[in-house]
Image (tube, rainbow, N blue to C red):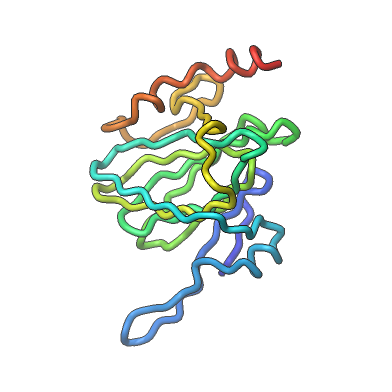
Length: 182
C-alpha cells in the first residue's frame, strides 16, 4: 500500500499497489502491520458497507464521542464519492478544518481518518457502495454529528443534495453546541 499524508494532521490517503496480469489485478486493501508501521490505528472491530442508490446522496457528517471515538478506513468499491474529513480534535492545530478527496472504484484509493474526525460523503455516481473498516464497535449512545452545511466549517459539496437522512439535515449549529458544552 502507498501512504500519502494529507494536509490535516493524521489523515492519510492510501492507494493500493495493484499487481496486474491477463486475468485482471490483485491488491492488498488492509494490512494491520503496514498501518501500524505508519503510526495509524490498526485495530479492526467491524466492517460496514453503505449502498447509495442516487447520485447526490449525502451521508454525514458523523463521529462517535469519546470514549467510543473511532478511526476509519473508508473506500469506495463501486461508483464514486466526494469524501470529506473534518478535524474536531480539541488539541489539533487543524481543528475545524476539512479536506475532501474523490474516492472511486476506479482509483482504488482509501481514506484513513484518525479518532476525532467527523466523516461524510456525497455520491458522484448512482449505485455507489462504500466500505468502512472501523476500529471500535458502534455505540449508539455516543453517535454524534455536525450538519453538512454548518457555517462553522463551510464545507463545499460538488452536487446539490439529492437525498439525506432527516437526522443528518437537522444537526444543530456546531458553534452553539460547542459553546453549550464549554
